[in-house]
Image (cartoon, rainbow, N blue to C red; front, side, top):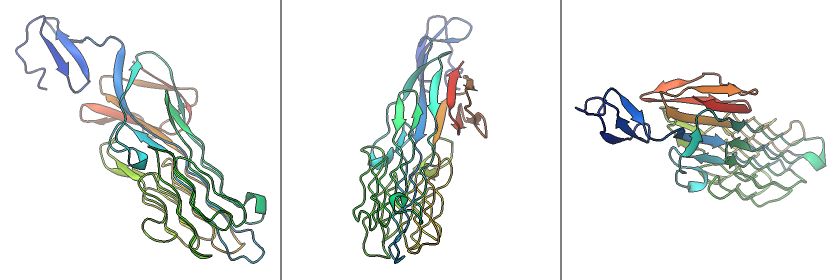
Length: 308
């Protein structure tokens, strides 16, 4: 609006802060001086880890909560307390890979070697990779590190570590009924109390504030972290899909397994004069959505994207 209100003559040059490109006036309209390259914003969240379970004969240990997937963004705070990353240059007409990580599986209550939750898968956009969340510990099997770490339990009482600039560590085990909550993108497991998953991080990349990537709750009956973390229950609650949240642990008995981690997501935001094309299986439930002079798209399955 400010640009178009100028009394311009051919040869005038400005820097367009809406599209983040230098532009010149050709006597009729404004033309980009950036060539084919443009800058876009992204939010890339990996899948959450699965919650741990109890496969002991005594049925009194329970599991730790799954950690949230790694959280990287140019639009606000990244995971692990990191600052926003630099926006990404893309070339019009070029194809870019998008991988949506699958959530880790919850631990089995019937199988001691598999009673820990498994790690979530990575999510990727172009050169940006976010690390899958760590699985919560079981009664016999250790938790795993990840974007955010899995919570502790009998198999490993310490909370597993998160990845720098992506997420926080899981919470420690504080007794048989106080297994650690999974780490979230915004805080460590157990920050808000024993068994509670760490909270995720809020972003306004879609035009409104939405919190994602919460850690799963530990057993017994730990609350999942804000942003979609599964509740520690019997069986453990699943992390919310397309938020990268961790699965909740199963309670301290043998009648239910841990919850699965939530799948990851990739959200892109770019000038509204561009159009995105999805291919190779990539899909979005809502398509492109306008936000002022920009628009965004939430990609929920893997494939490729290009801009024109």
